[in-house]
Image (cartoon, rainbow, N blue to C red; front, side, top):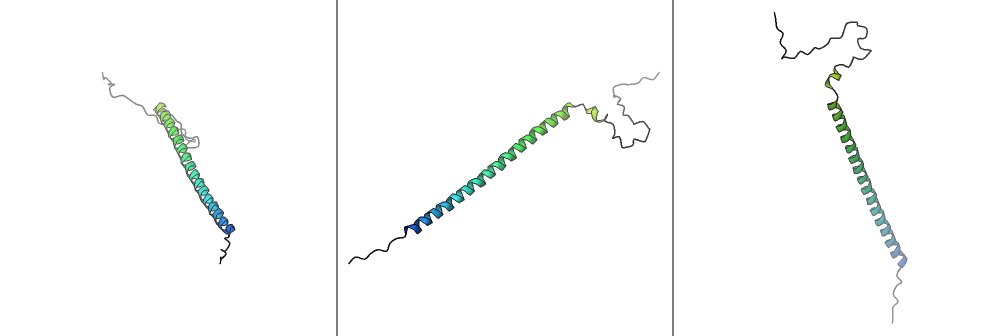
Length: 103
């Protein structure tokens, strides 16, 4: 007396294996995409910081090299007090070490 073993359904087993491997591949690829986006954002952020740093350095050097009196010599905008004919006040610098002698 031999009993026949029930036939195994290999198609259901292979479908489960392929479904899990597809899901696993999908999760892995989505993780790789998220990682690539994060790395890209970090790279862009670093590049922007470096550009701002060099720009700030150039502007600081330019400000240090330009003469200080040029800011005082800039005339006012043409629309502001353009109708008044009074001369603009001037600032005269007199050094302390110069002494005037009275006779």
